[in-house]
Length: 546
Image (tube, rainbow, N blue to C red; front, side, top):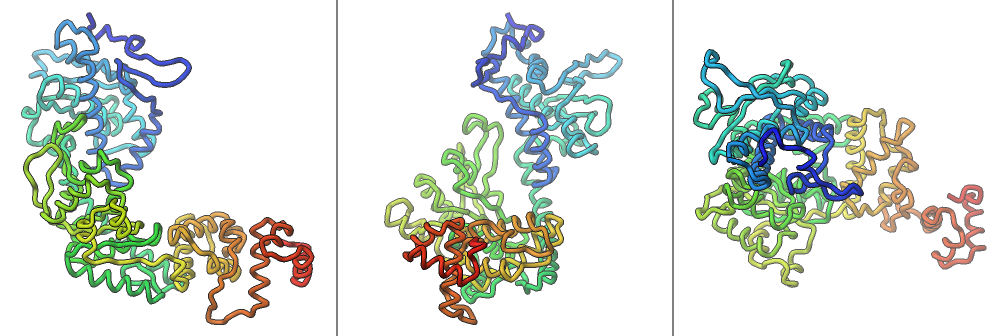
C-alpha cells in the first residue's frame, strides 16, 4: 500500500546508469536545468509580453499536473482515492520543483480552503528573480498550474490555485490556495483567466496594439537610419529602386484595397513576409491582427489543430478548448508561409475553410464563421506541383486570385547597395559599433556576388562584416569568404569595363577562390601555367597572388 508519505524517489525514478531514457512512475521524463527554463521565461516575456507568457506557462503547468495525476492513478495500489488526491504536493517536491509545507487551519482561523500550502525553494520564483528581477505580482505560474491540473483531474472538476504570497515579488515565502472554480470570488476571475485558452483572446487586442506601437517605432527608426545611411525609403519601410520591385510594391498596395486571397511567390529570403505585412498594413484590416504561421515548421498531426483549433478532450493533452489561428486572425489577416508544404489531407480542409469562410475545431461537430483575409507564400512552383499531383489544383486557383512574384536579389542589382547601406546602418545600431559605410572594394564585391540567399543572406553578411570590422568602414576582407571570392559580373553597368579589365578581374577572382593555387586555377581557366604566370606578373600579383 502506498501512501503520500511513502512515495520514494528511489522507487519512482528509474534509469540506465550508462545513459539513455529516464522514467518517473513508468513514464519517460527529461532532466532540464532550471536556468534554461528561466531563460525560456525571459524570452517568452520579451517576445509576447507578460500576459501571454503567464498564460502559456500556467497552462503548461496545468497539463503537466493533469498528466501526472493521470499517470499516478494506476502507478500504485492506493488504499483509497483520497491518498492519490493528496499525493500531488509530494510529487511536486519529488520532481524537484518546490518544497511543500501543508497549512492546517484551526476553527478560529475561519473556513478552511479546499487546499492551502506554503512553498519553499520555488524554482520559478528563483529564476524570475535571477533573469527579470522582483515582480509586482506572484510569478509561480507553472507551479500553480501543476497543482491545479493535478487536483482538477483527481476531483473531476476544475480546481484552480492562486498564490497569495510569492518570493518572486519580495515575500518571505510562497503561499498558495486552491479552490473549486465556483468558490472563487469575482475579484479573482481576472487571475483565473490565465487557466483558459481564451485569456489569449482577451489579451489579443492589447498585444495587437503593442505590436502596432512597436511597428510604428520601428518604422520611425528605419526612417532615421535611412537618413543616416543616405538611402531614401518607402513610407511603409520598403526599399526598391528597380522597376520590377517597384511594380511588386505597387501591385501589393492595389491588392491591399480588396479582400481577395493573395499568393506571394519567390525564392527563400526575398522578403515575402514583408510584402504580406505591407498588404495587411495598407488594408482596411490593419487595426486587427496579422497572424503568421510557417506551414513547413508544423508537423502534419498538429497543423489541423494549429489552424482550426481543438476542443477539450479531442486528443491526449487537449485539456481545454483552444481556438486556432483562423479564429485568432478574425477580422485581420492570416499569413500562410510555405503553403506548398501543406500535406494533401490538409489541403482539402484548407480549401473548405477558404471557400466556406468557416472552420471546425478538431473534435467539434459545429462550424464557426471566420472573417479572415488569407495571404499565402511559397518558394515552390505550385503550377508544377499541381501537374505532379502533389498540390490540389482547386486550392492553387483559390489561393492564386492575385499573384505577386518577388524577384530574387540577383535580378534587382540596383537594389543591392541601397539595401546593403540600410542593413549596414541597422546592424551598426544593433551591435553598438561605429561603422560609417562600405569601402569601394567591398561595395563592388557585393555587386559581384549572386546572393542565392537573397536579402536574408545580404543581411547576415552585413551583420558579420560589422561585427568583424576593425575600422570605420567595411572592407572587402570583412565580407564572408564566398562573397569575397565572387568573380566580376558579366553584365555591363553604366560604365562598361574593357575586356582587359574584365579578364584581369576574372583571373584574380578564380585564383582567390582556389586559395592561390596556380596549377588548379590554370586548369580551370584552360590555359597553361606559364601563361597564368605571365599574366600575374603583368598584373603585379606574383608576390601576393591572393
